[in-house]
Image (cartoon, rainbow, N blue to C red; front, side, top):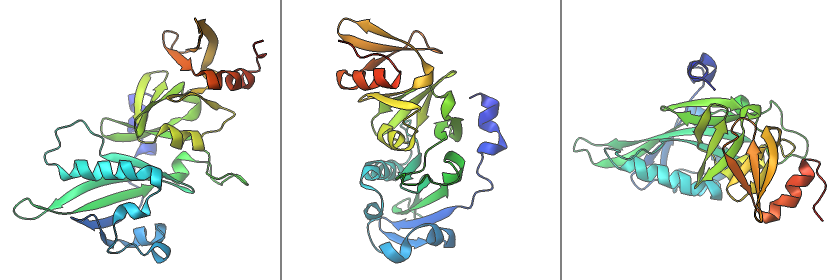
Length: 247
């Protein structure tokens, strides 16, 4: 993904309608715009005057709480991403959060702005009996911009806490989704989880190597980088590659 691709109008959000959710200092929902009411399950969840984390998937709550904690600090001196991707069963939401202060710079609340980018990163229609839409693009953050890379351009994925790093032919990129989120959304015929911290694009594998008792993956576009394969996943990987099992 080159710089021109990241600046292409295809990856900008001017044409996206924004959902806006207002929180008070206790992180309770106190207001939202009409688009947020349309996208979010307001009638079913009844979120007003309730803690905002109650309405996020369990796996997303630490990231949302972290983002709110960081937004509470002013100025933000850490190099922390203030944009986040939330992965829920039928939607992929891009969220940005900012704090609101009074005349004395005291925290009075937060504003969450989100975009529904499901159609950008997923196939147009969910597959029958498939619990979540497959991603055909992965959202990545760089230089305070969100860009999307086609899955076939991904060499491997490395876990980084609640987030992950994506290796493409031109290097590493930050992604707001966790490796578990991506594992649930990526095509298992194309990607394999080979380690607690790594997934690989099967078509990006050049060869398997042995280093003592360890199995390592050499990537075609990054031959100096080796991806570790856990013992529990080695057999499954060899099967996915059409290799005979070791005897």
